[in-house]
Length: 77
Image (cartoon, rainbow, N blue to C red):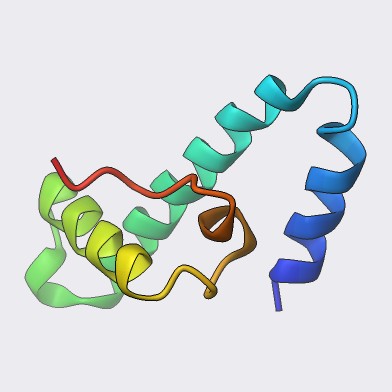
């Protein structure tokens, strides 16, 4: 659902200024962690734990989101 949009952003904005996309990918990972905190009760109120769990999921299957396949994974440390 999101991969075509993410791929388009990468193709358009990264052509001339790829480092500007770092902030976008970081924001998207933070948003996904926030979504996980709302979705799963055991992660509610635990930012680091939600980010850690998202990082584990990202490393197990990097093809879920386009920016993960580029190597912009959430940190697990």
